[in-house]
Each structure stands twice: as C-alpha cells, then as structure tokens.
Length: 477
Figure 1 (cartoon, one colour):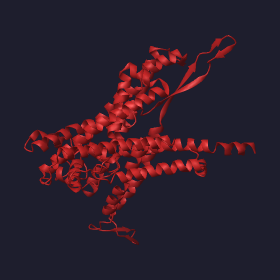
Figure 2 (figure 1 turned 120 degrees about the horizontal axis):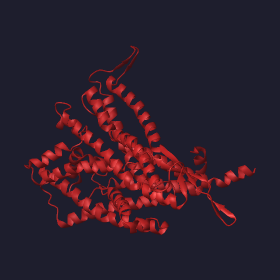
Figure 3 (figure 1 turned 30 degrees about the vertical axis):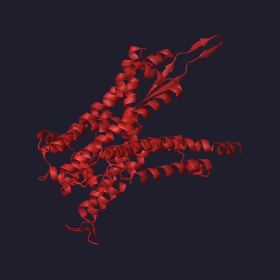
Figure 4 (figure 1 turned 90 degrees about the horizontal axis):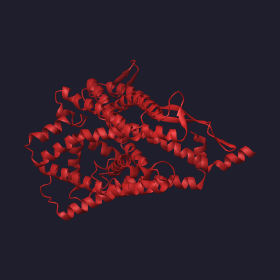
C-alpha cells in the first residue's frame, strides 16, 4: 500500500469530493438505523426483538450486518440480507443454467442485466422476510401479554412491510452510490460500517466487568494499586494480544493463495509469432470467503426459527420448545436461562454442529464457484498448459486435487474463526463463571479484515490515478 500517495491524493478536489460523499452516505445510513417501523409501540417490539436475538444466532448475525437495525426495530430491520440472498441465488443459478452463464460472460451488458435481475429479486425477498419478522415479533409480544391492547389492521401490516422493504431497497441504493465513487464496494462498505458501529457495545461490556471490584482490586507488585477487577484485567490484556494475533492470522488467511504457473505454447502465423509466454493461475486458500459461514448460520438457525413460530402459535406444543432449545446458540444473554448449573453437554452441541457445517459448505460452495473442468477447457483452447500435466481431463483432475488440499486447511481455518465467540465465551465461563459476550464475532472480524483490505486496494488504485501526473512530472524532472 502507498499510504503516502493516499494522503497526497486527498489534496485533489475530486478525490476529496468522493471521500466526503461516501462519508455522508454512511452517516445517512446510520441515521436510518434510528427510524422505527410504524407498527404500534416501537418499545414494545424492541422487547420482542431482544428475545428473538437471544434465541436465534442468525438473527444476531442479521443484527450485526444491519448495524443494530434489528435490535432497534428500525426500517432497515431486514438490512441487506435480501440483496445478499438474491445475489447468492442468482450466482448459483448462473452456474446451473447455461443461458445465464453465457449472459454473465457477455461483458458489461450481461453483467448489467444480471445485476438488474438481482435487484428485482431483492424486493420480493425483502417483502417475505419483513412479513416473517413482523409475524414472529407480534406473536412473541402477544404470547408475553405485552401487546394485547394493540391489534394491527391490514393497513398497519401493509405500511410496516412497505417501510421495511423500502429500507432494504434504500440500503441497496446507497451501496450502489458508494460503488459509483470508485473507492471500494458499496455493499461491503455498509456491512463494514454496520459491524464497526457495534464496537461501543463490546467496549461498554468490557468496561463494566473491568471496573467491577466486588471481588477485589488489582495490586501490582505491592506498589501500584488499580481499582479494577484483577481477573478481568488480565483476561482483557490476554484478549487484546490474542485479538492482534487473530487479525494478523486473518490477513494472512485472506491473502493466502497457491500460485500455479501456466505456460502458453508458441504459435507462428506468417511472420508473427504468438504465445511462448508464462502466466499464473492464483487459487485462494478460502475461495468461498465468508459465504459458508452465512450458509451454516442460516441452515442451523432455521429449526430454531420454526420452533419460535410453533411456540408463538401454540405455547403448549413441546416440539417448538424442543427445537428452540436444541438449536439456540449459547451466548451471554441466554447463558443463565439455559445453563443455570453451568456448562453441560448441550452447550457443545451447537458449536460442534456449526463447525461441521462450515466445513461442509466450504467444500460445497468452492465446488460451485471454482469449476475445474471449465478452467481446464479454457486453458486448452488458449494453448495454455501446466508443466508436467497433460491438457484437458488430466489438468482438471490436477486442479481439483490442489483445490481439495487447499479446502482442507481453509475450511478448518474458517471453522476456527467461526468458533472464536464460543471459545472466548468458554474461557470467560471457566475463569469468571459467566460469558461477557462479544458484539463482533470471528465472522464479523473476518468481514471487517476482508473489506478493509479490499477498500484499501481500491483507495490505493484511485490515489495512484489521481497523482499520476505528479509522478510523471517528478520523473521528468
């Protein structure tokens, strides 16, 4: 990264304008997170949201990427999840339907059509998700006897669903406005800002436990006395060191790749020769990114959501309570309720299943986005080959073998990152008897690191373009 060039580029009016536009859009996005859904008493539904967050890890993840929009019952409650889901569906269909695959390879025109279809698919997904959340929240408040005086009409439902759908569409539009500035991907940047906005929650939680001196204060070597909890103090110090190590690990994990050298055969047409050069084929260690974690979270949280719906409709149904209990992620908010006697065997059920699903979905999604047969065919058509490997089927098998080896380590590493919240909770339970809860999970931290690196690259590229004339003048001088 050319940080000196980046700071120098801020003297350019166009560059400065782009940066301020992005900052203004992010401020507008954070303001939207505080506009409540027009559905009865907002504070009543906030209580239901709190209960929902305690019972569903997927809801907690949605709250994370919506910047707390779910917890505050704002119009951006569904956030960007409909757009992300629509993008994943279109991407899977592009690989499954040959006509869509051809369209995706048809340059800028094809990509624009696919993007337009993604936007169109986002709207019905946002409507469905809005109806589902309002139904679950309302049934939760009714079952708790806190919303009996409010009976929503059809007009209330239409207004609320419309507001939430509009909020999701507005976020998608704001993301595209950021992308147009040429400094990073807008959708990723909004998710990045959402996760970062949760940092005060973590700091407040750590501060509350740090300055709780009920069980004594810190005494260093008999000559320094600090009014802090000694156990929590040393845990925070170790946690800070571990956090730096994790960030370093995530950067290396995100940048890790296997580089395969591609040779191109020399061809002669008339008096002109072509080819005879070498190129590279980089294969990322985790080609699937954080998609496997999102898939695993959604898949594992579906039974819990179904259980909540069943319980909301019929509180006496044991199936609903069983599903909710078995598939609820252990966290600081529900630890005392679900585990009054401390950690039990059930505490390890969700993390273990989660870890296995992350590995499975890593292999599954990588096999979809990295088609070894297609790459081998393209290399063969272009006259490219891997040294020591025959073109065609043998090349496809070789690439498949390399990808599977990378996936083994990549999937285990990604699963370990996804386990960080459970690992830290377990350590806190062992040392102080209860988890404190972290607003930024391993998944969130991975998203932050990935998006930060990509945005820095985009900012660096834009800065080099802006200051190109200055470099040219300096070289001429």
